[in-house]
Amino acid sequence: MFFTYLTSFEVRYLENLNALFISENLPQADRLVKLNTIAIHQMRLLTDDAGIRKIGSGDYTKERKQWLETDFDTVMAGIKERRKKKSR
Image 1 (cartoon, rainbow, N blue to C red):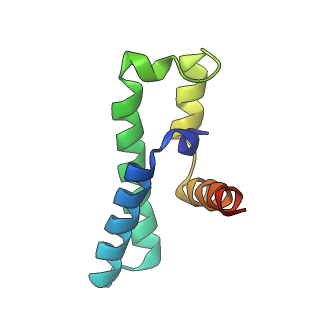
Image 2: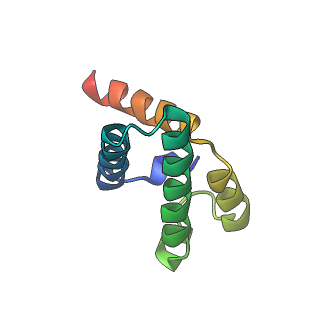
């Protein structure tokens, strides 16, 4: 899934945006939609890079579709799971 390819910088960026949206009293559902849209846009930018395409199984079209169809909750669950593993 695409969250595997997010760098810690990109995750912090999304976390900072979420904090900004919270300070603006944006409802959680609206925040999730905005953050998901931003994350998808970032991944599209990254996957347009030929070097990034080489990561994974090599089936760029299949993987790109999978990455871009992943919802924000799944992304966040994957991030939290990786953090748990790192803290062990």
